[in-house]
Image (cartoon, rainbow, N blue to C red; front, side, top):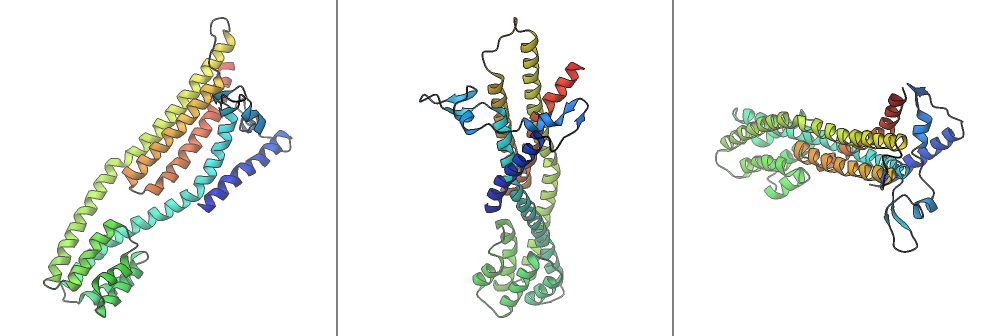
Length: 318
């Protein structure tokens, strides 16, 4: 969180320096296909504090002293998006790291149960079996399994041994690994217990693979939907602006274009958030992955609102 807050401040500040260089002519961006990227960059400049408080371009105004509570200034929200992108970058890195660890852990749990079942058919004691398997396993499960094997070898308390080795693992992984504790301390036919658990884990793994393949297209659908909403909003606003400027006597706007721009932009970000949350919870089953998809969708929305209108203007003028 501290890194995210730092990035949320650093990215807009660096962008302000970049804006100043472009505005002063120190840096000159190219004109490609009739699109002046200098103008696009300058459109992200935030207004001054007084402009925000006392502007006529307001979404929600205060009844006291005509103070603007929610300003309808597009550049302000484009600039805020840069801060949002900076805030999401560290969370994106952490989410990817945790997701890779989680996938590796689940894969290792399935493999361990299969290997333990095979070893125990040869008559090898469970503690020795776990010690042998743990040597060939990488983190995150390998070191934990090695600790657990040493604890059950010295007849440590079952619950304390399991909690010491596996307390920080996800719930679904702990449930499967609990069968090792049952086999080690429950007595009876440990080999059948582990074999049944291995068969159950194999069925879960196949179910996960089928579920992932069926939901794989959901992420693409969400991305396309958010992009379609953002682009259609910009296209509609651009067409209204063109018609209003060319047919002033026919079309009159009671609502400012800045107001409509802000409403569509904020709506796009809200849709992107809920779409990201859906992908993270339903498809990936890791809530922190929301940051990853929100980051990409925010970048898509920002570029859509910055680039689509200039492209349309070039096409119309051409």
